[in-house]
Amino acid sequence: MMQAIHNFLLCPTPDNWVHSALLHPDMLLLDHANCEKKAASTALNLMYRYVDDFELLHKMSRLAREELRHFEQVITIMEQRGIPYTQATASRYAADLRKPVRTFEPAKLIDTLIVGAIIEARSCERFEKLAPFLDEELQKFYLSLLKSESRHFKDYLSLAKKAAGGDDISDRVSVFLERDRELVLSADTEFRFHSGPPSDGIPN
Image (cartoon, rainbow, N blue to C red; front, side):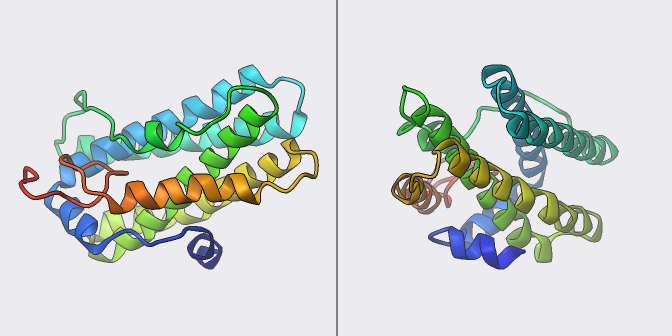
């Protein structure tokens, strides 16, 4: 399951990002909750925009339900730990990853689905990388997410290939994977679930 993710992504999450995550446990959970909510919203938006593909509708409906369930699980953990759910700015990762998305169809759909696959793959990789360093409850929870997140990655990628009508999409996948690598390896001044490693002077 995880080997396919590792083979797909061009680089692992840097170890100093993991160290930063352990220094910011409240923000880790808060931004994780926000990521789950945004993932559900993305799936719903695709369902509204592309109504003529039953496979997409089924897969995005299931994905949205699962992401909202994960959101509920994260905020339950936050509540139990006395962590408030406050407003937090998003990392640059998702917005910058989407910048090369083309604006005409079906290219827009293909690229959007590829981006979805990469975000799910990166999330899955980070859950696995973080798990050994977390307390027992969080470790069990994060490891439980691997199966669904890896399936979401595969669903997005298969839908992208289908939207391309048999055309090779490897060049487009490479465009976005290169962007993912650049974002994952370049420093960020604020810790977020999808941020890069901390720059000097990151607040602890």
